[in-house]
Length: 218
Image 1 (spheres, rainbow, N blue to C red):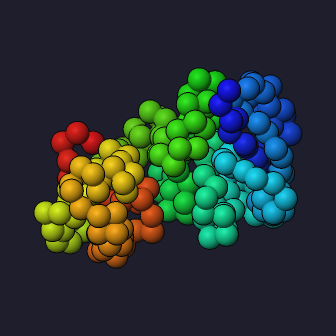
Image 2 (tube, rainbow, N blue to C red; image 1 turned 120 degrees about the vertical axis):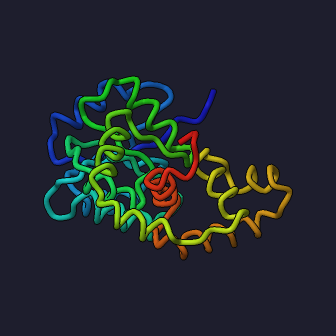
């Protein structure tokens, strides 16, 4: 029997938390705690082994963005999934930049949410189709002059190869095997990509590639 994914639910609406518990209460998930805001969630993380934090954005005391930043810094092994009604491109980018691996809206299906949790628990990214569409619509409104300046950052051929595999959710080891290089070399290229593009994490690199349409299959 597979080990269940250990979750903390963070939302300031108790009815939302109760609803989530009702359909996440099964063998593949184990809810180890629930919190009304980011501060309470951090206290729970001190006391429990957790795989995924499912969090809203707008909450009192500490919102989901600040919580995600704190988790990324203090508990890098814990994955973050944003579950919110906030569908603005700005909030999506803020959460992903803060370290969230996934972003789904509260009107998603139960299957979508379960799949999102399973995906981010593996360290992979998950965006619901609505969120992907919002990101793409936001990109179409960016002035062409801004896009032109941003796209002038020179990437080497190897960096582009690695970025492409990152977007396809390859792990460091899988990238190393695919390109016949060491994992240390992969990590060096990743650091260079982060520095060149000015983003903070892998999610930011994926957004960078999507924004600039660097690869036909994204």
